[in-house]
Length: 464
Image 1 (cartoon, rainbow, N blue to C red):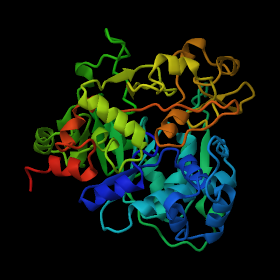
Image 2: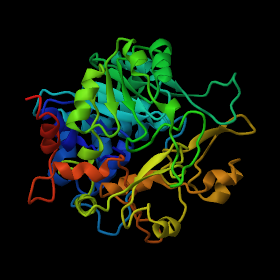
Image 3: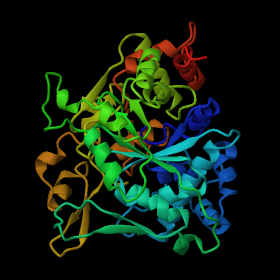
Image 4: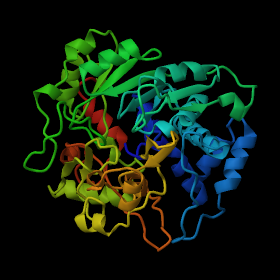
């Protein structure tokens, strides 16, 4: 769901309907800080902060970012620090508080199940947010876009508020190097903390090989898998055997990318299927194959309860109704190097003129790649940053071609676009799965919008 699209209102709505509602934990610290700078519409962030177990930390975060009545239109948002291998206490507090608030709000008013989703590629920014979600009692932690082998062990340590580390993927590191980021809950929050429950961990994968490896070699218990086909929205796993582009300029997936469900089923762990699965017949086939269910992303991304702006949702739904909606699997857009699904929407970064008109800038830094400098210390670079800066840091020119700033673009999707110093307003970049054109089936006759309930009731209609 990108950044904030599956926010607490959507996750709560799905949970109330008896399914697992999942909030996006990606870049929640920025989203939370910007909500406060807009005056906390509805008072929801204040309501969650009032239940944070360490009031002093909640108060500091509030005082740092809250603007009564909201910032003036056209003013820039206050920037937050950028994550490094050793982030400062203020950033860690924001990471903990923001994820606590999102999960706490998603769990109010029902007894349903709530999960949170993170990207393994955001290694520098994952530890404090995961702990914050656990403080709020999150039921599941889901993670993809990489090999999250160490996350189960992190969950085990956080149950007792023990410090945890993550080994970083560092360009130029030798096999003997062991670069790690570390988070110590007690050092940040104090000693008087109740034991937490361990959320179940679901790894988001695209192959049976990875499922088997994670089940056997992770630092703790893997509790299940989400198996994403390359038709799913957001980041896709690269084709096995290397990327070859077809006539449309999209990566070509073949027989090697087909998942052996029997091997995954033999592990004895539950799994869910994802990628163009929001159909009654596909849900039925998934259950018959041994899956516990399906993941629904694209259909819920454009429903009333999602946090995409009303303008974007209306624009996309008009395209769908007119038969003009399309999605492109962009092989270069993401700084991660993973293919990334982009919906073709006028005014977004998917438009060539919009992309070419955006000044290169890396002011959020979540997708920066750590690299080993000549003196043995860590540096950070992003192929979407200014080309000269990237090359100066040892990057290659060809790695910068076509790269887009997903950090800023995805935050703009939900109505929080940064206004840069020269007045430039960051445009959105909208991700969706290949079945975007089919979401019209959830719209009732005579209407131009639909709810999460319309989606779930449609999918379950033959089971009730």
